[in-house]
Length: 116
Image (cartoon, rainbow, N blue to C red; front, side, top):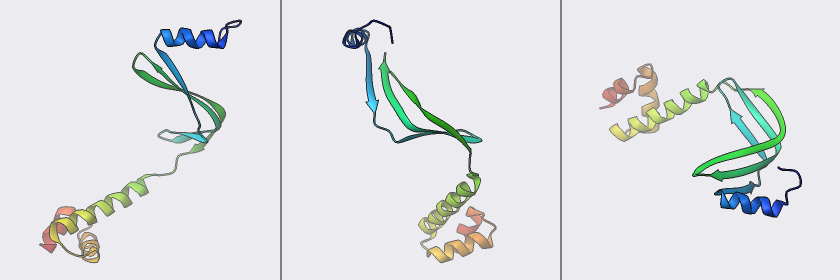
């Protein structure tokens, strides 16, 4: 960090200032953004705790990729949650819940009413 400064002294000074560092053994770091993913391969990750705040310092081979369309995944998970809700509220089978949801154009309330 500072040329000519002994690493042991540097660690002692950092400890006095309330700064703690910890190396994290990571294989890969992925930062998910709205329209892309930033992938850091072979990373060197350092966790830094300073004045109650935790931050990470990451270095490595950086690449980017287009973010996959997660709206399809969101719809699937919502459909599964709706089916679970219908089963909870009506006590019907999974097949009955799926059919009721499909018959009502994915209207949860209408599907529950149709099975009640």
